[in-house]
Length: 476
Image (cartoon, rainbow, N blue to C red; front, side, top):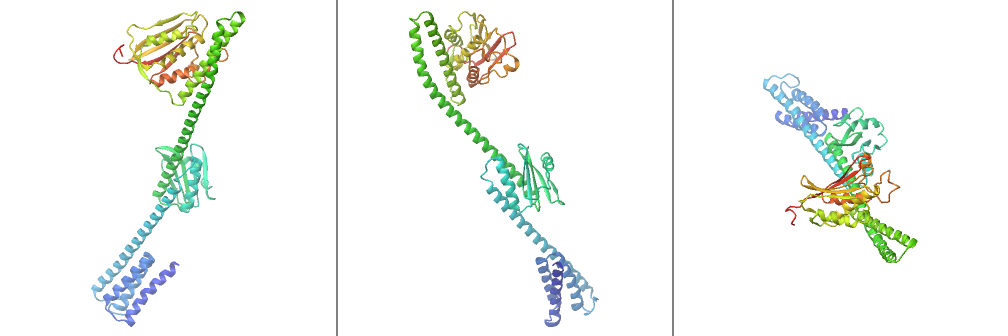
């Protein structure tokens, strides 16, 4: 094909020379301009090599047939040498410019096609599913849209290797693993392989390999960035979907527990009222049995309240009504409510005279203190003393409940505020749900404060929580 183009360009020049020499006598300027136009046409249609050959043939023919002495390659007039040289330079330069314009036009067309393919790829990736499905679709579409032999992707978080096309095996799993750790992509022209790391915000996501006549470096970078965005978008959608499902689950659970709690409380109230009424006139074993019924009804009632409270907290329905709270009154109220539970124990309260008001929810904070005091009683012997303290430290009111029980192991101290956690020693000996401290923690943290425990095995435990100080002293 190349030889035919060379022959055609030579024949074209020869035909022009023959036309002006034999059939259409004109001056030398006209001949030169016609030859120049023909050479430009050759360069525009076929290329620089064909135009250069045509230029040399045109110079020789023009010299032989039109420059005196005609019929020889000798040039008598030095001006004709200058004219001949100028013609040759003009022909070659014009051919080069024409070829350059063609090349630029071809490159522009190639960029246009690449942009169209990228746009098509972006459109196809607008609706994505899971990250795994997104990667599979992307790799397959890249091969189809850009006409590649194959493509492969290594997903770092899942460890999956996704391949498309029968020729993807020349890129090994090891190649993809290594490419995910480097900073820039590599090109192997001999194998027609380009491998690039895929990153999002500096975080490595994996690596992409393209095989075949792959697009320009800029497009390869755009593909890598597009894949990173597609993966992150799919991951974000998955997380949002899971979060919404979890939220809906919590709302449903809260509604269900509220309904169950209401249905349980109604018969419990009747049982409690009946047991209390019968206790007044009972004696002997009957009195003992009614006492058990009464106590167990109280325990069921407390269990129901804890379940409902935990459901409210997990559903995000815990709402605070912050008011000025007198800490002494809260402590006195809780100890009065637990008077029966604390019967026979030594309870010490240590509060400074000028303790400021706290800024807290007057209904929720007593629940926290009540839970800590109940814990101190529940996990210690019958005569073990309990100490309740309150003080101001670092502009916070710190309330503590201390016992002289067996203490808590260090590994259990890290988990003691987790929902449903029960200590190893008391898991089967002591009644409880494991929700009390979790509820207390949630209430304290809702106030923007913290709760913690200090304990050593054999030396008892002290539970502390903080409350914000209300400005303006004791008067609200």
